[in-house]
Length: 443
Ligand SMILES: [Zn+2]
Image (cartoon, rainbow, N blue to C red; front, side):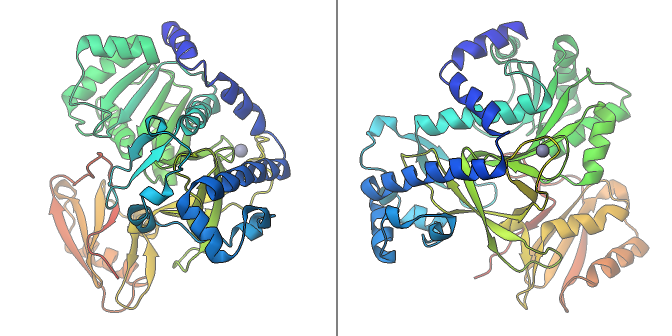
């Protein structure tokens, strides 16, 4: 959309330099990227020591000053920042030298637990915007302002529905055509398709399950989507089968991304599919080793945002698990380090009575050979899991037995799998679908 490209260029004039930087830095050699990150990190540590009461105390407790942090190994001396600390020490985490009107409030939606509130600043937003433009547009060969169909459902971002004029305004200003992932009724999909047929988006971006749902709809109604340059997934896990199915229906390559409100876009997949490239200019990522059945080298992601000086998140445990990449040089030429796989929120890790931890992804992986169109595993106690399936799938006793047998091999003794037929599945408050969820808490 030519007007949107023009409008976005004006709206993003402050970001243009940063976008230019990100276009170049991603192709620096790996070692140079690490140097670049460390320089940014040193500045952040100096600032935090001088201006953030929480970090002044942390440095005193470990008996160090920023000058003592000479490399990434020294950096590990700084204790991990948890959500609990952020809630309890909220005011002490805010920088004293930043005026109140510069603090931009933000929060996580609470889709996977209690919401978390925090502040960010303009510099953070600048880098976050630039990283999104790179990850959501450039990566798929597009430019900001190119028409993009969006299937998203964050409560305060997507209203119930859009008026004709609102839609036109969105398309001309940002190039975006929205479909609310909260409500994917056939009527709305048809209306959305009409807009897409007319304005011909070059990109499609959204929740995996919402895009998959639209793909089913297209297939069942023999409809085709306008020719796309790429599909960008966000916010949910995606397995290979789903990715292949969606690529087949839309006839376009897809790219997985990983991000969070606290840190914006954290990683993005390139067309070589060696994992997700970290957005290293914005975040420094570490892996805190944990034991997870079926996954070697899995670790809690510990992330430091390098740009937010208002309320620095240094060594923040975001609550997701990842596996570091092993590919040294990606064929795309980017030197940005790789995360082999993000294996979901820690709330999707099921913990059992004997302490065994199993990632939700494992449950999804084992399900691939069973003929269920949709399903959801819900852990309700430390020894009980309910597998919800669509009533229309007619799961008979033989199939139940096969499923039980398959999973039994991986589950600790005395864990029961129950079955429940449902007409529809619960989504989180932000419209995301979770294949695996834990409905009880462990200590
Ligand atoms: Zn690559």
